Image (cartoon, rainbow, N blue to C red):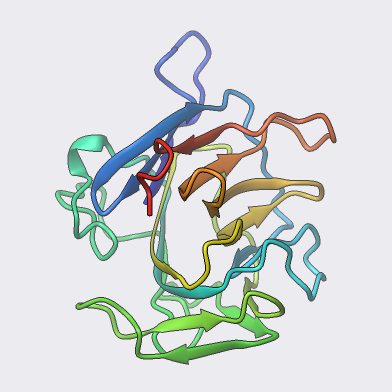
Length: 219
């Protein structure tokens, strides 16, 4: 689960990125110049930099289930082990949208379904309480939404269940810009754990704020 609080001028407590794993805060970072491209879709199983792109990079070798997006930053006090399904103590209501990914790519809002490109297969592998997941081959397979799903200039929370089959530097959830990713949730091979990364610019010389745990703690 990752959260972001949009920057507010003069407030040093904003612009904060946080990543939780099984309810535990793993790490934080700060991005005071978040990026957003409303033309870019949400992708699951890899990243792209064009809505028309048919092959992902950082392709994910594993499974993803129950992706939820909220237009709020969940406070640390509400993160719990069950937050992959429903954030504990959540006081802002149901998610803005949700893709259960148990058998197809429909979304609960019925406005922004994800479609399959390449090798991605729906199956029953999922934790208790979830109906299934979609498995990716780590090469060609990914899902792409009809339109942007997260306004990364504002507050947001993204929650999902992920299972990686090979400890490679690959991305499970992304939403891009034309050069980078406005945000992504990925496995950092060097750090041996999950990370939440954003970009400060769409230019080649951008910085990439990264929230993640200490080496080896996010396996």
